[in-house]
Length: 458
Image 1 (cartoon, one colour):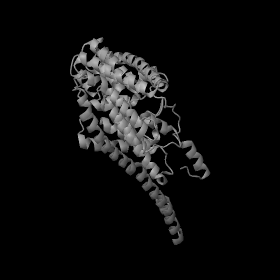
Image 2 (image 1 turned 90 degrees about the vertical axis):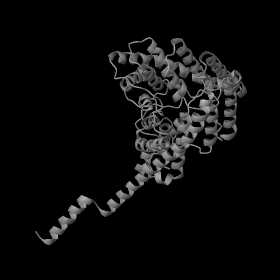
Image 3 (image 1 turned 45 degrees about the horizontal axis):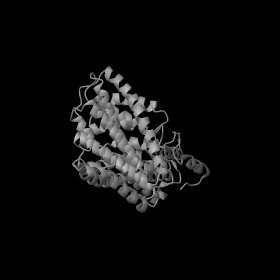
Image 4 (image 1 turned 180 degrees about the vertical axis):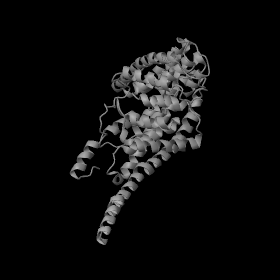
């Protein structure tokens, strides 16, 4: 074989093995851009969200919320929620340019709207309104402002660096930020990822943002845990296991929680509709006094105003004591009405944890009728299945129980109950923004059409 032939085959082999130098350089640059977009910027969103959530958690959960349980004056208990709702309404009116107080609902809405973006100018006013609502006794959760804060930061960062994202989904860092907020607040990185991917849809996952959500969720959790510790949210001592009877009881409890979640969703929508019809002063006044009156009644019965605030102490208090069936039923009804009235009065906050509290109480009630059930199992199963039905997030609900208790022993019964509750819920839910799942993510059709024609979608 001639020297020219050897040279030809050598060049052919090198090109086959390594590719054309220009192609290799293009692939390397493309990989570097993907690294910047999906890893570095997602991590930056997670770190920033974790830092801000740590500050919010300290101010509200570590300071203001615990103060609520030390109040002994019926007058303060009666009028404190009213004052909080008034201030929250003023914050939305004068500090939020968009004049609306949606948090997780705004995340879902922006997720589905191709041209819609989060307004960074809305963040301070909404955050202040939600913190005032919760610190003043509104029966809502901190996960609403946490999700909104992270989503707003992520979406704003992607908008400011839009030239880097010409080949990516416009909602990528929006989802990543929402995951970071949820993960940091509950010290539950897997829950944060799944919730951010799951909650926009009635029956699906936003898989296109999986990697950025994982990165942001992990970095947000690590930042938060570095500052406040990594201990699980609840202290639970798991038993050795569960049996077939526990699975059957979990399935029955899933149906009960679906019924409760459906009633809760109807009540929430009714309260929101009534708020739109009534003058602002009337809805705030009636609902604020109603939340306060419930707190006074609960304080007179239990010695603590356990219906005020997110409900962390309520769950831990019930876990640490053997409360009677009548007391559990009263707490469930009181918590249910306090949350509905807080929303009806224009309170700003999250609805994930309030549903978790109601599901937990339903599980405690069910456990009183099932003495053969494994100790401590049904309250956690109820927690998961109520959230799974109300917010239509069965995966996130089960992950939440496992991560916030530091043990996975309730995973299988919780999964069974959550799936049953999710299916029994039908197409109902507490969110009016969720949409049916489609194979293509928001904006993907437009992006595909643009790629086919050689254009660029911004």
